[in-house]
Image (cartoon, rainbow, N blue to C red; front, side):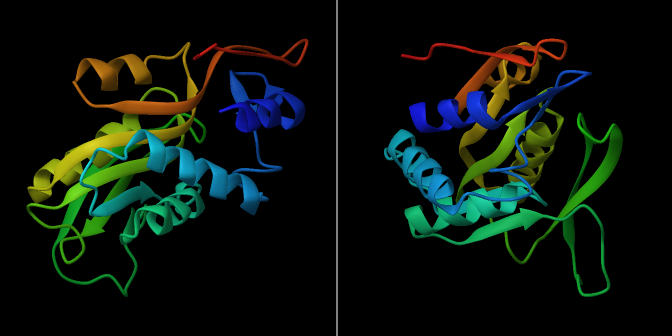
Length: 194
C-alpha cells in the first residue's frame, strides 16, 4: 500500500528500543483520508471472507477498526483494557503484554457483543510480538465465533509476532512491514510486498 509506506518513510520517527512513532498520522493525530484508504485496502484483502464483526483493542485500533467496520457494513467492538463501572454482566478476558508500554493488561469484551457463529475480522495498528493479537484471538475463540483473519496496519517484521500468528494458521494481512529500524540514523527499512 504505497500511500501508507510513503507516509511512514516521510513522517515516521525512529526511537531507541525499536520504537516507530507514527503519532502524527495514525495513532495520536489521525489522518482521516489515510484511514479511509486503509479501510478500503482491508476490505479488498478480506473481500472473500464472510465478516460479520470487526474486533480491535483500545485505544489506537479504534479509529482504524471503525473505518473498516463502515467499509464492511458491520458493527465494531473493541476490547477494553480496564473494567469500568458501566461494564456489567459476563465478560471474555485475556491477558496481553504491550510491547510499547512494557506492561501487562487484562483486556475484556462483554459477552453481549461477541457471539457464537459470528465471523470476526481483527484489526489493529501495530504488530510486534503478537501478544495483543493472540489475546484477541483467544477472546474470539472463547466466544465460539470464528476468526476470519487479522488486519494490521504496520507489522514489525523483525519481531516474532507475524511469524507466530501465521504459524498458527490465521490469514494475517499487514499493509506495511518494517524490516529494520535504525535509531541513530532515523532509517526505516520497509519490506517489498509486491
